[in-house]
Amino acid sequence: MQATVQAQPNIALIKYWGKRDAALNLPAAGSLSITLDALHTRTSVRFDDALADDDIVLNGKRDEAQTRRLGAFLDLFRTRAQVDTRAHVESTNDFPTGAGLASSASGFAALAVATDHALNTNLTPRELSILARRGSGSAARSIFGGFVEMAAGTRADGEDACATPLLDADEWPLAVVVAITTRAAKATSSRDGMEDSRRTSPFYRDWIATVHADLVDARAAVHARDFAKLVDTSEASCLTMHAVMLSTRPGLVYWNAATVDCIHRIREMRRTGTAVFFTIDAGPQVKAVCLPEHAEAVASALRDVHGVEEALVSGLGAGARIIEADG
Ligand code: PMV
Image (cartoon, rainbow, N blue to C red; front, side, top):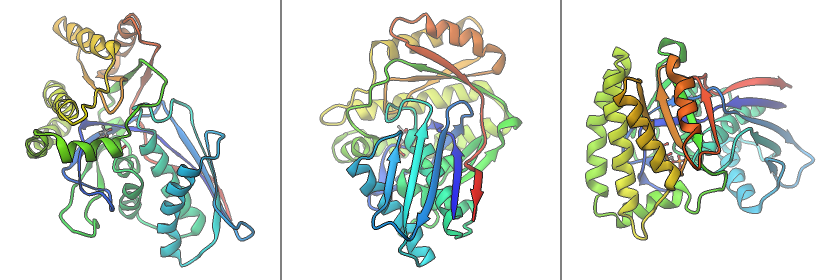
């Protein structure tokens, strides 16, 4: 049986940076995100008795390390389905991969939903979120659309560390302008970077301790559609996470000059009445979250920033879903 799934990246407003269990990919704290609609991952999975090994093609290339990582992820499903069949996987992104645009979130969410369908395991969205998390912590959130909250959970087996939807995309249709300042892949992956922060940043414990209150605030802001409140909490969460990154040894500097210029440009626009705030992940791209009526003005202001290669406008989108299947 085969299935093709589309999933979109999500952008955290309350950030996830640090694990309580690295093997099971259990976050040390919760997070809150919005799923985008303008960037897409498409993943096809087909199990084939004739295959001796998994055959995994990502953006047109086969790569040994990625094949091992994705093969281990497929094993989680094979174990549940009690099969040993190998799979053909083909996945493509229509945006830069590994550059701080959450390609692992959409990638593992799409792979989880496609594999579930191809193996006929019939998992619930909650179970899919738990399994997607094993591939990448943020992937648990891309199973759902709109506004999504990820729970850290307390169980050692991670069965309560999953995402749940808060609001659908059309219940508060915000826009996100993604300013791309480089297409190069980042030097340190989130996976390695957050472990380094946990081990070496003197601020790590304090950072984890701030997340609960930020989540309470952000959740209330989302339910009340209170943009001003979301501005405050989201920028604080982003900058506190980057303070932890900077204080890691060796320091993780994900920003470039254009990243900093975009921050100032966004704050300047806010001072003059535009409802917009920034958020930045483990990379130099800047995501400006705004009301849809301001999206074009924000995009054009960011395109004027020296070093910004492109500014894409996205709305909020749906969760991972099957677009083609048979068998
Ligand atoms: O799930 P990962 O390993 O891609 O880590 C995501 C980390 C950040 O993007 C920096 C923050 C987040 O919550 O998405």
